[in-house]
Amino acid sequence: MPLSMVLAITLADILTPGSIHLGPLLVAAPAVTASFAGPWLTAAIGALAISGEVLIDLHHHLLHNQDVQAGLGGFALVSLFVVLFALVRDRQRRELTQVRSVATAVQTALLRPVPERLGPLHLASAYLAAEAEAQIGGDIYAAVRTQHGTRLLIGDARGKGLPAISEAAALLGAFRECARRRSELPDLVADLEESFHLTQSQSEAAEAEYAESFVTAAIVDIPDERPVLTIVSCGHPPPLLLRAGRVISLDSSQPAPPLGLGGLCAPQHTLTSFPFEQDDVLLLYTDGVIEARDAAGTFFPLTQRAARWAGERPEGLLKGICADLLAHVGGRLGDDAALIAIRRLAGA
Image (tube, rainbow, N blue to C red; front, side, top):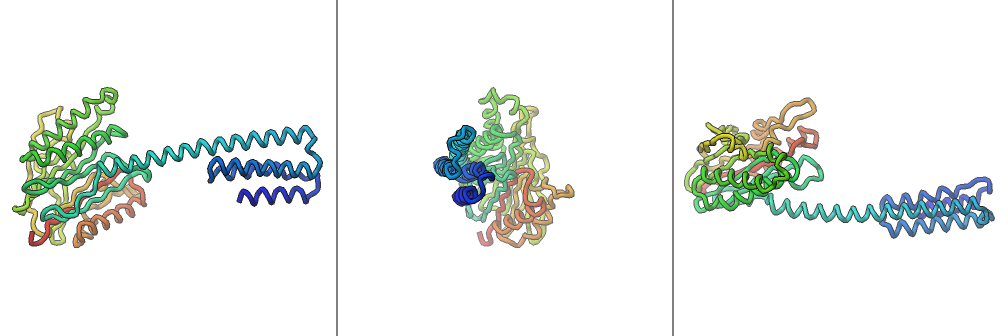
């Protein structure tokens, strides 16, 4: 297109009477080129456009005119500025590409999809970012295989920006390390609380931001040999149990405060157990799911939508819920959302 512009404007100016001056329009050619091309192509189009202007002035015998010479100098200066713009924009684009690749690598390292199979369990996970360009955030999940079963974590860091990411990374690392080592869930939760406070104390510069930071979390233990599951809730929304077409909310009898607020009181990490039989499906989620609103301000009805997809495998269940969730909010969430579905396989 820029080449066509240079040729068309040059020919039009040459073929029209001398009283009509179309040459100044040639400055649009390098400007248009800079919108999609790099600095070298922009410079080449700029040089070609200046050559076209010189050819026009020669044809009309105006090259000796001081006004025309000043116009050519201004044309060259504008073209130079456009080339510099393309150069800066190209450098920023490369830096942005590098930052995105690093963010993707960090996201992959921090928030790996859960394994499809752990012992007698079939699992699936899903993560929906609120921002289209976001790669990492404060919603976390993990699944760890232990000697006698499987342990799962889902949580939501309430800090903002880098502090939330730091808290999420620290909590995931602590869970993956301690879930196999600690035999009792209360001890595991106590370790996670200690790890969270350690992360806070390591950054005095971010003290004001950390002061308002905490993580809601649910830690679940599912043994291989017994058809039960045990939950410790730290201020997190209750999981849902899908059984024979019914959806049951697994409310904890005495939920503990979120991780990071344990210093305000002496939390009692109460264990709550529920039957978890063959073909039952456990659905863990963050509050970005249940707090999502449509245009009328109505919250997403997770229990109803989960019942709609109750007969699906874990990946089909999450796919259906995520599709319903995005349709409910019009395609864009106001908060990150994470979900895990766990099914106890028949005959396991």
